[in-house]
Length: 280
Image 1: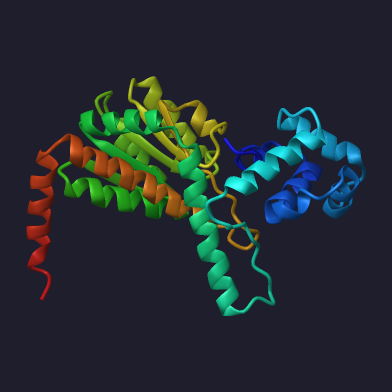
Image 2 (image 1 turned 45 degrees about the vertical axis):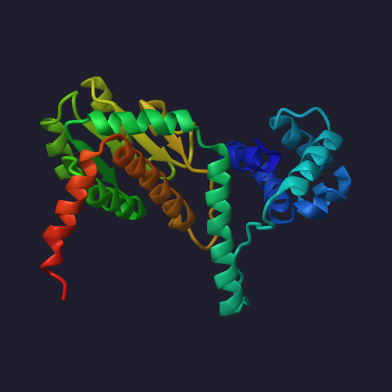
């Protein structure tokens, strides 16, 4: 894993000072290669060089020079020069468009670089064997959950979706160990989602978590964790980038099921035929 990816994955574990350093590094990694430890502490606005030392040690590195060497190696092998940029009030529509698209592409590439293929395969197997698939999520995650509900229903899977706590509780009351709960939460700290995941495990039901924090409360109570690797901007507080990555992860599982079970193709044909009468 690249050092930039390590920083992104550990971002939520940093102190405020360490996050200030991380923000500077992620925003302009090229310039950091030429920095001294004093330069970086000054640019990040932290009190002393000790904060930088704590920062690179939290990355399991022994020296600032080692950090810069790894950073330089990252930049040398980067296939695309795409960096995370926050939107500024003075940005033109063209610049905003470029930043949003760049951030989304970067998030997809970062997740591709870090996601565990074995976890994807295990999740696909759970999807395949489940009697029912329950898709739970709130807000932006609910949009992802509903999209998945639609897709997997089309290939013949028995699916349920909800973004309402009361309905979720009702569904869970009649669920069995043969069902599968797909819990979607970018932070992994939404209380209701975590609580339903805990209940599922207590009843012997497997849980697939799709989250941006592999050390979150949700991840700790899940059978399989599929972790996105994104860094949301200050303005996009509703986790726009992670939503796209979550959709792609579910699309991957959807495609794997279609390849593993040829009957899904027949189900898809029937679904397409069923909706064709609503079109001109």
